[in-house]
Length: 208
Image 1 (cartoon, rainbow, N blue to C red):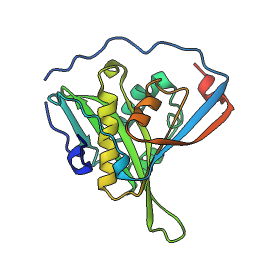
Image 2: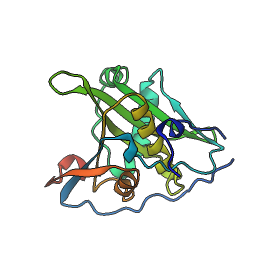
Image 3: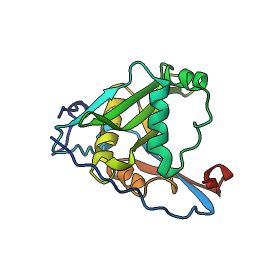
Image 4: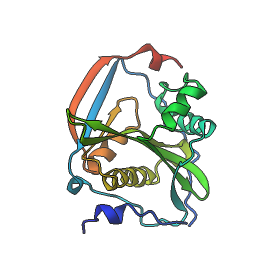
């Protein structure tokens, strides 16, 4: 049975959900960076996948962005996948990003602890500026929360939020450095691939 966007946007509260103590397997860095771009152009394409046991799970919007907390989320979620882009940003640079009116950050809590987050940016597009596009800039889970189905729950929440806020196009990109399940998760939620780019692996991502 299809779930409407308005229904999907609700995120109930709190059962003990086990967390994993395993880290993602270490894989060699490929020589080529492959970036896959995906988009969703209509809310009817959305295929939500919320967990059937939402007790213990809570989504909260970071209404008052906290730079130190954001650094914690970015570094712990992104470490296994070599997220490096924002590690060198100053507090002032991050504060400017986090407080921008078009930015929305939602944190996933499991049994009271932050388990992951999703960051969206809504922008005007087109010559008239009347067309709204939303990018899912980052989304992911901390290592101990992988393999529990939380990723599809988190992504579903972000997609529903974007459509409910009036976006007309939703897009995301993932790469071969990300979780091997990220691309599959996006496709199963209704995203369609529209571009693939390849380039030599930047030195930034080769560094240990």
